[in-house]
Image (cartoon, rainbow, N blue to C red; front, top):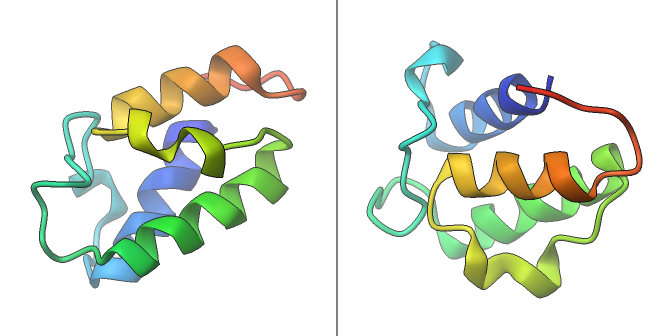
Length: 81
């Protein structure tokens, strides 16, 4: 659920038709299609959806995998890949 939500959110923001193209290795810093504003907007949406604080930890999220793992460890809801 978490991975799919993140894939859809990124794909929408960067204009990718197939969300599945966004892999766990997708790098927020290396992929220039996603602006810093888009990144923080996505984190805000995820905070609300997953009930976990993310903005204070934004510097930790280099890849989708880092973000998914963090959410799975800290979210109040039971979420999995």
